[in-house]
Amino acid sequence: MLEILAIMAAGILIGRLTKSRKAFLALIDKLIIVSIFLLLFFLGAGIGSDDEILKGLDTLGLNALIIASGAVAGSLVAAWALWKWLFANKSTTSS
Image (cartoon, rainbow, N blue to C red; front, side, top):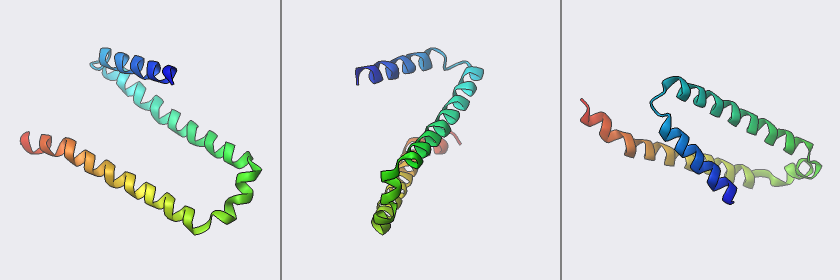
């Protein structure tokens, strides 16, 4: 856990030191997207190679679908509300 916090702190420090460099930020954005896709790919590969998970897919059924859909919907609503809260005042005060 300490390693994760140290890596996060180092990332925050580097981000603060390089925030004015547009090319570096563009590169970071692309690396983040690629990293997310790779994580999703490896997660799918891990699930696909696990026989226990694949055998249990039929028993998960409707409850798993409802829980997953609720989690996604809740995340989307929370992200939208946070976006509005953080940036709504900036767009109305700048005009």
